[in-house]
Image 1 (cartoon, rainbow over the protein chains, first blue to last red):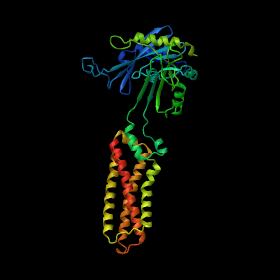
Image 2: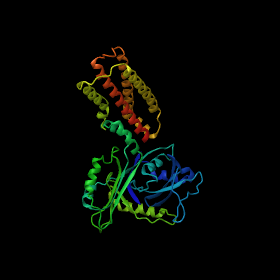
Image 3: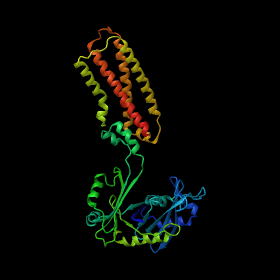
Length: 283
Length: 138
């Protein structure tokens, strides 16, 4: 499970996020739902550990979802009522003493932008501007040089749609007509991995340079995410490096429960541990 | 194919063909049968291209919508327009041929006919091949 570090920016700065969270928890479950696209999101449960507020956001996927399948049983749908959907859970930690947040990354879950928007607009008569800004790794270049044992590289590419840029580059209409069919997929993810002892024959600095030439983290770049798991020596703990946005991230090993979900307590413990390990970064 | 070549090949090849026709002193057929046949061909092309234009405007699919948002769609319409105008010009050229003595047409008339016939065919080929690719991929 991937975990990321964010700073909560507030406008007005004196806004009490704790009071906003309390008002969410005071509301009954059905009153916490907020529509986002075809789905709903809500803040479902929480636990307070001193200054830390550990929350669990749920996205209700109302349109489509996975099936239930067994080794000897065919895949079949879940028996859901019309007002039910598939729940995607995201653990969220807010440190009330310094406004740093630690967020579980769930691709299908509630993303940090949605969390900030949910809390900003929960009381529609009292909207505020909350923003979760990812913490960027200042030491990324030194890490890229030092961590030569690369065990995993993940690259997400958003195939480019036909645009006026192709026209300005002198592309012909015949080529554009043929390219129309290629620009159908929304997202392609490539993962290359190797055993921890051996690692990949891979230069992270060269790879990061190539990503920069493609446009880095800008909207023009076809690469939407690039991460590498690397370490200095086989004995070191692996670190996940965000090569595109240079975010502070970590991976937590999780064991699914009998219901095949990561238990909420384990996810909260994981974000709590990440928060403790990142205290030196919360300047 | 780069756009500069795509834009110019339906005119460059006819220019070369007309130059070869002129330099090699090929003879233009006498009589008015070729004029009537050419007008029929030009009229068919014009009608067909005008129908194509209305099909292009009514095409609807997410991919076509994507194309419509770019400058390429304007280029497609200009290719169609060029093909229609060249077909009409070819018809007009052949019509003017009836004003000359069918046994002794002026020497430049054959050169003009070769240029316009080739340009009409190639602009038609350009736009129809692009439209087939569009329909296949949309």
